[in-house]
Image 1 (cartoon, rainbow, N blue to C red):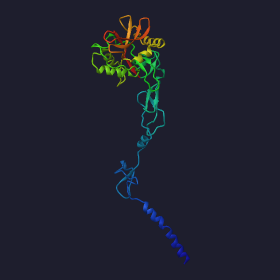
Image 2 (cartoon, rainbow, N blue to C red):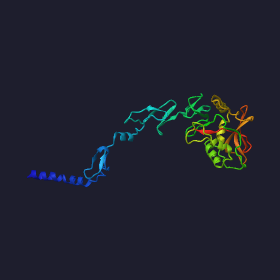
Image 3 (cartoon, one colour):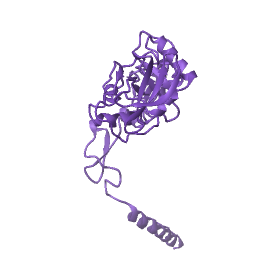
Image 4 (spheres, one colour):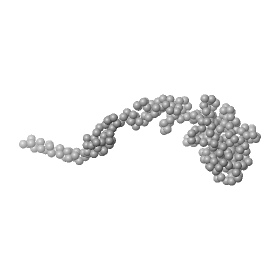
Length: 301
């Protein structure tokens, strides 16, 4: 008798647990993770309560999710620098003078040697030597620092004794002096029309190797004033000489070179870097129409 009661008590003790399990159980396929109408190659499990499937990921899909997506055969890449997953890498090795950028997943030029006076090539590298196997773009006149661009200048003037403006002199309001304004100033001048000859000349300069999407510009006041320094000037002219270019101060038919900027001084004049034949430097303001300027375009890197 006691044994029967014991069994009844034991069976009753399971009732709350059974009721509780029935309360939380579900037969909803989507809630249980069965969300696909079919699986590629049949690699999955069908929901026991309906027609949906839970699919298994392929090896390539798993590798892709983990970031192993690179073949490492791209520009300036030299094979993988990580373990492989389905034949792909998540980090690549780079050729000499290039380093791996984990954000852009590309090999980028090491610009640590792009110092004042160095020669800058179309592949983004710099050298103190003229390398015939590469496409030369210019000479470094402003070093890259943090988030600030470096700048190069053409090794020869692309125009001499040219007017800044061939129309009537008036204030354009384009007076920004900072280094980074070089190209924004130039674009504003080009938008004002063909009378602004110096800006249009610089903007249309497209030597072989110019990076896609970038335009050459007239330097701003501060960028030219950065050259207004005897030490930097000497280094830049040494680089220009190495590149068989035309030294600053020897780029005009007259006895000085007035390298025009994109920064207006006032309604009738514009800032320029004056360099005489002996190498004396000075930031000046010259008449926009009769200034006899030299155009030496610049490009950020």
